Image (cartoon, rainbow, N blue to C red; front, side, top):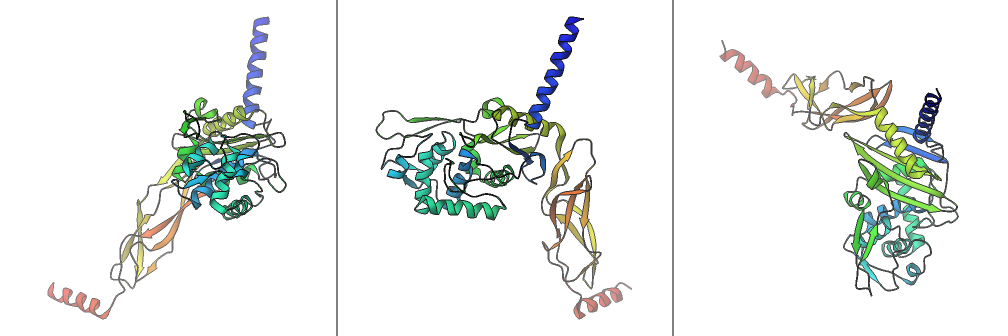
Length: 368
């Protein structure tokens, strides 16, 4: 009886632990979204403005990639040499390529690399931070300000879990960014040393979580432990964030597990798939085919039946151009829209003319 009781208590504790992990209870703020559509799969205080420590560097890398070349030569100034906190130990006047600096930034979380990158791209840290905030606004962030390129405590330096998910989804579309943040170990030059710098990614999920894509860790006493993460399984990529979370890796794994368990990707149309035909008025042809400009897919709850809504006119008026957008297809799940793609005309349809009707009459007469 006692063994059964102990087993029952252990099972209950296990359920409690798993439920806690799936809800990221220790995080002050958290979110999990699907990469392509941005559908929120889980959230907790996702719009609360908080300091974000070195997860700041997701935007640092993004702005650098968009405003420089990987082959640029980046020189460490006195400002970069003296930055406190995590470092790749740059010396004043030392040079590395932009790509090598980005590895130092995203794997080793080098604050000195962040300053060197900022000064190279914008001439000053202040101007680079202006570019960071401007880029955040362009992406759609509504509660994000950057005062540093590295994330050390500063006034007017904050974001939200939701905004970080927007920034990360945008950054992951850059193949160079994706390659760098998913690298576990890298070797870059080290001036004045016989050996190279060996950089190890601080994101443990890369080696412990199936399908992990990496991204960025962060910690300061003010911000707590912060983590931006992503993973891909069975054709679905999720992007998440936990802020001020002492159980950062466990909670990240837990909410991703819950997301993959509850949701799956549904594809209702393939790219270039033909849907059917539309009538054409006053045209040399009576109909035109309609095809999808992209695959219509999105995350849906397992066990539900997503539907497709084709938003098209009842008929088209000639002339119609091949490749002309004539409508949209929408993926619906449980009454809500989660994805849409453009629909195009499959061929040219010229407007009827006197010559067209004359040809028709001649064809009819010769057929007698």
